[in-house]
Amino acid sequence: MEEKPIGKVTHYFDKIQVAAIELSDALFVGDKIHVKGNDTDFEQTVDSMQIEHESVEKAEAGKTVGMKLSEPAKENDLVYKVAE
Image (spheres, rainbow, N blue to C red):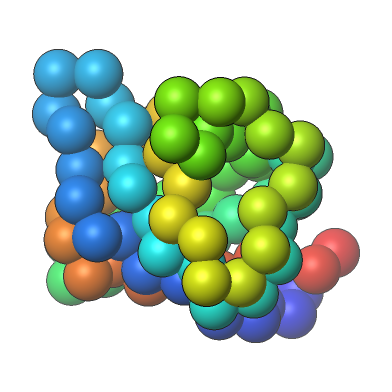
């Protein structure tokens, strides 16, 4: 499987399990991502994303999205898009 870096976690909200992810490339609902850091390493499918509390199907490079994660993440964890 090929992975392409697409962003990093800038903040993680423990109580609601949501990460703010600053994107360096476009991301779509349905894409598979890999979140990796010193203590973090998991994959998940993007079920939904929000920009400024509005649900979006896609987000462009340069945007920061909010996304519910299946496992905890930390600031500066890297986010990769997984190509199958």
